Amino acid sequence: MVVLTGRWRVLCHTTMSPSKIGAIVHAALALTNIEKQTH
View: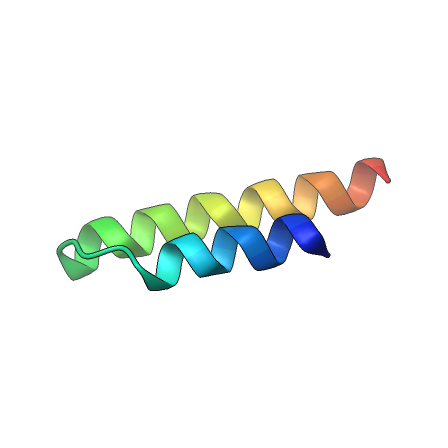
């Protein structure tokens, strides 16, 4: 849970074009799902 909170805190303070933000959010969700499966 702490990792997820840290990731979203960083994403909230990121300024980029919407298409790049979408790719970063997609990657963050994928990493979170992978971590959930391994724990």
